[in-house]
Amino acid sequence: MKRILLILLFVVFSPPTLFAQTRTASLLVEAETGRVLFSQNAMEKRYPASLTKMMTLYLVFDALEKGEIQMDQLLTVSQKAADMPRSKMGLKANSTISVENAIFSMISRSANDAAVVIAEALAGSEAQFADKMTRVAHELGMKNTRFKNASGLHDKDQVTTAQDMTILARALIQHFPEYYKLFSIKGFRYGKRYYGNHNLVARFYKGGDGLKTGYVDASGYHVVGSAKRDGKRLIGIVMGRNSVRQRDRDIFKLLDSGFAALKNDKKDINTLNTDALFDPATEQQTDIKEQKYRERRIAAKKLSESLDKIVSIEQSLKNEYQENIIKKAIIDWGNKKR
Image (cartoon, rainbow, N blue to C red; front, side, top):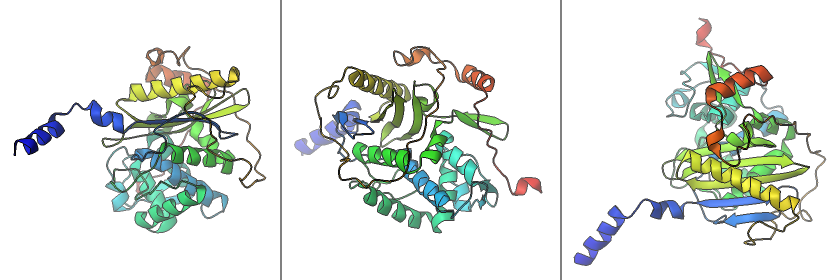
């Protein structure tokens, strides 16, 4: 009996860092070659949180490319979508949202209601859409991933790995180069409000142009980021951090270390793993030409050294107006015109 009590006390009063350590993972890959520059717990299963929306967006881009939906097409918001918990856009049941605005809502705001609207429009129900997400994931080589919803809200059966999410990031970049550009938006307008992109890699990192952040209590803070410098693209992911600040610092440092390694012609940044995540010799060749990535303007100096130097959201917004780079996306409300 005493032994059982001691076990229970250990579980209840164990320091929070014990669990935090088991849910972390990191991976840094050279996109063109698949060479792994850094790997830590990259093949261990984790809860994806809103990184799930990367696959939701992959299927949206696929449907757009096939002509199954159009950017300006209005989609009806169901009661289920309207009832989704935050983060959300606050969409009302029976209102409408354009495909374009749903995309921006997921990329910038990580809106759960928009994700459900998309899922129901493309597959009839979110459950059917999640089944397709899993099938496509396995086709892409994401062997340890299973999706149960379109938003990333916590489900104990919804799992992925840092390696699988890196595979998905690379697929988004290579398969849909034109649509991938949307990940680089710094924010978008919804009515009279402006929402900055949660992903600071896209907003501030030199050469950064995407991809996605994620968080639920069970997972911790995630981010997948990609950046290109001197013709070299890196894809980095950090998972399970304890705060937004820690997550952002880690992804900036990871990318910085990777670019430094490439510049110095090093095999990796810690000799943990030099195997390629992707095998270019066995991959199917496509006619897709790599897009030209526009140069990113830096909104704050030396951000990689300390995120404390990042300008405020208000100042960032002011700069964005001056640079005329805001995508003015407005939610289309069906019943607002009544």
